[in-house]
Length: 180
Picture 1: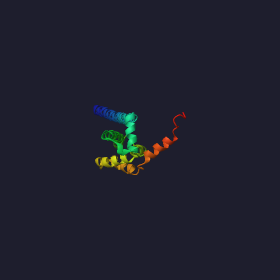
Picture 2: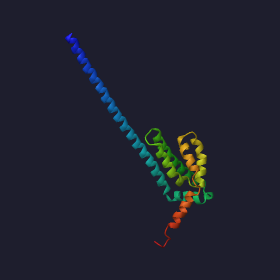
Picture 3: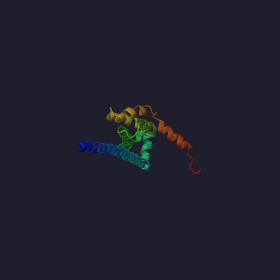
Picture 4: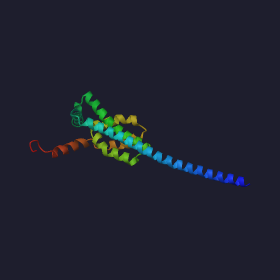
């Protein structure tokens, strides 16, 4: 009988040890999952920054900037090659937003951040008649997605002369040549 009690005691201690091991294992697993989520978020955020950087690098090229400006000031002068450049520029911006939406869908960024990014950036990319027409044609492909749900009402409410007005304000405040 004493041997049975001894075995029961050992069995209870072994069971307790196993349960403690399981709890420790779960805690380690939770920590690891959080670290992986952080790494995933950082990787995806970096990808989004790279997309934006690539976009901005394209925009500062003189030929691209000239095409973008003509799309605002005199879109009737655009050539088919110009339209391809603009199509790629606008599609790149939409891809930046889509990247943020994917982060949001994975629970890595809040939906409010995505909406704020679209709201803050959209006027500078879609504040012209050309860009709004482009979006009108493009939005069909995003039907039923969160991108359309978030971006469409914002873009449709942008003043189509936003960029032109902004350019005029900036040009009027620039120093005259020779005044420098």
